[in-house]
Image (cartoon, rainbow, N blue to C red):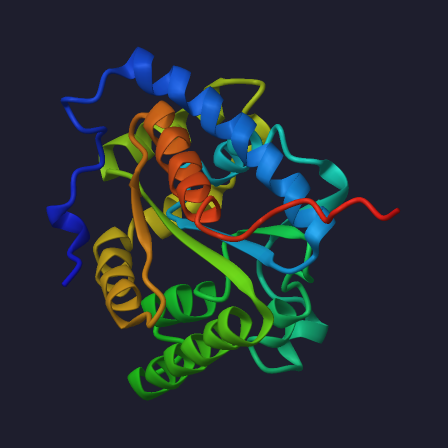
Length: 245
C-alpha cells in the first residue's frame, strides 16, 4: 500500500550527489543510444508519464533526461484543460490519439490521470465515476502494453508542500521562470491534502505500477528517472537491424 505522506521527498541520505550526477550523465547518454535502436527496430514504443503537483519539475525532467534523444522520434505532449472538441468526446479520446507508434518515445506532461484527480478533488465527478474511469485507464494502459508493445513508465513526481511553495515563489521572482506562473496553481495548492488522498488512490489502484520519484532535490529526480528507464530498456531485445547485402 502506497502512502505518499510516508515516503520522503528527499534523495536517500547515503547517495553521494556528485557521484549520482556523474552517473546521470551516463544514463542520459545511454538512453539516447537505446532510443536510436528503438527507432531503427520499430518493434516497441515508449510512453513516459510525468505526473505531479504544480512545481514538481515535469518540464525539467523532460528537458534533462531526454536531451540526448533524437528529436525526430521524441514528442512531449502537455495535457491542460480539455478543449471544446475534447469535452465532446470520452475522456480518453485525446489521450489515445497521442499514444506513441512503434519506434517513438512520447512524454506525457500530465496525463489521463488529470481526469480523475482534479475532477475528484473539485467534486465534479462522483466516486462511482472515479472508479469507472480508473478501470478504463487500467484497460487502456494494458491495451498499449500488451497489444502494441508499448513500454510504459509512470513517474509520480513527489514534492513536499514546503518545496512546492519555494518553486511557485521562484516563478514570481525569477524572470526566466515567470512564464510558468499561473495564479491558479496557488488556488490548487489550497486542496493539497485532498490531492494527496486522491493520488494515493490512483497509485494503489493502477494495475501497471508507478515509480514514486522524490523531487525536492532535482538532481535526484533526473538520476532516478534516467536510471529506471535505462535499466528497463536494457532488458529488452533492442538492436539495430542487420545490414542488407
